[in-house]
Length: 170
Image (cartoon, rainbow, N blue to C red; front, side):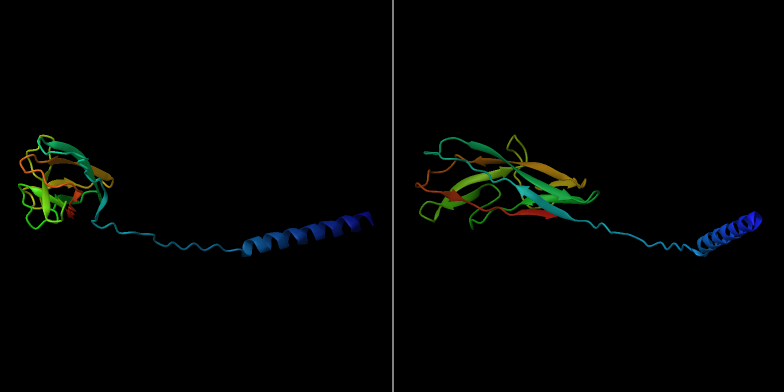
């Protein structure tokens, strides 16, 4: 009997082992690949623009200089130009932009420059009076040098303002 029990156990163990290995042999793995993709296109965005506040003053007898900033973000390798319009005054020119205010019809002359020496007026004519650059994927800052011009009669008391369009061409 001892042999019978041993043989039964051996047969049972062999059956169990073959069932376990048989089910493992039936498992099949299939691999399928798929693509993930994106297309980067040329794009530029105006990230920020600081306004220029010339502050409070009385008689206009000297230049008032202030600095603002523009930040532009373009895709890497994208060439672009930044330009600044003349503002909303109908009588503004490249020589003198104008804030309006006071009694509503009065103006206060100022201008915006690309350089700290106040020699290059910022405009919208590519490549004459704009700033050209190539995008690097990060915001790129550009200073805007503002000067309130003294060659004018002091207008009446009040708030004077203007709105200047920033144009990014790419």
